[in-house]
Image (cartoon, rainbow, N blue to C red; front, side, top):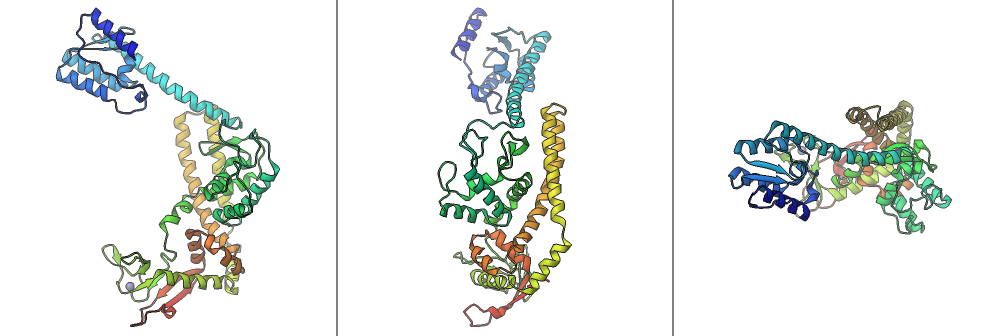
Length: 444
Ligand SMILES: [Zn+2]
């Protein structure tokens, strides 16, 4: 930078210009689209007439590859009669030939910058597509340091966890179990639900290479679980509802309680002081009667016990059998999700081979991704049903697992057996929890 300033000053001296000021924006802001305070100050000084000429070291110092910026800067200087000079190349921006040269230089600079980042992106994509492991990072669980050779003891753990997850067990409870058994992570630490989720959702364990969160092809290393199971797990864990509902749904019975007085659904309405409560809300945006309130902890506890009891009933077992027979949908949605995933892989490969442009790639991807997300949503619904499926007739197991399920899973289980609960009026002067107010409507 010092040398460039010195060069500019020499040029000014040879032109017998008096140097009024120096404008230096730091290099990092180049191409990144960040603001350039010094360039903006230069513009102000040109506009105000404080300076009569501008010398730059190189045109890309001035324009940062943005041709529109160059055009408008040149136009401004022309209009105000401000002279321009350039240390390298000495482009005379006062002539049309000079301006043409400037534009070409500007567009060349932009091309080089785009090209460089594209080259880096392509390099990573190529490595990914060839199936080689990426450099850096710690040893992947289930594999040796070379990231290719399977480590049998850990591979068994991977397979076990995948199986349990697909059977409906929450990630958190699996992680807890591993820690209790003293099974460490690849770095010797304890499993967190996040680290276990990351491991299980990785394309690696099914022998696939991932790039920017998407599978780009088969990997150099062998898979530990099948491609099919890998796709199921990824669909299961990638479903954003699963992640976000936990925070949003602190009320287990949201949408399930109905006011016995007016028939509206009760909504979460904590008391001032924070005690959780459901209420038939009245006022702006609500159409309830405002007469029914019920303590959340008590009603949730009671309904949960009723649901656990219901899980063992013959009625529910018959219902589930009927549903299984009439809903072969899961297969269809797995296939849809798989087909979409394959198509995404194929598109990435075509782009990699330069058979399609990046624009075509993006356009095609959008369509496929929307189909994938539909399939995932359907699968999530079915998976909740599947969760119930594994507990029907085993309320003891459900009871043991209940606290380890997250709220969205608990809600799904409750909603799978319970249509709604009518909440009748509170008895006057009766302070204890009054279960006679509750009238469950079980799903047929
Ligand atoms: Zn009401």
